[in-house]
Amino acid sequence: MGETSRNGRVVGVCLSHHRQAPKKNIGNGMLREDWGLEGDAHAGTERQISLLASEDIEEACKKRRIHAPPGSFAENITTRHIDLRKVRVGERIRLGEATVQVVILGKDPSEPHTYAYCGISLLPEKGVFARVIRGGSVKVGDIVEAEI
Image (tube, rainbow, N blue to C red):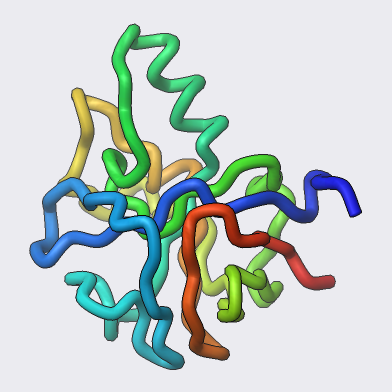
């Protein structure tokens, strides 16, 4: 099956041990049910996992003439070839062996967002936040599939 707007690939599995810091692409990790990415500072919160499309990162970087590797915008999972704008709250997304459920799209503009990369914050507008409903491993190259 070819990649469509409803499925794609993982291009980054990123974590940071501290909030308000860029995340580092570690290439693989464990998503723990009802917790998040093991070792990440945001695990255990309402927004256990954050997803961001590499296409949105590339667009922002092109406008600013900068380079940003996966994790630069504080996302846990960087995706490619899946249109995250089409997912809705309540939908499930398969990430490798794990499954997450979308809980929030973006962030309320009035809510403070304390992290920006080169002055750009993408998660408030383009981010997808989810909770882990089935744990498992996720790694670069794994399938990302929105389940209908």
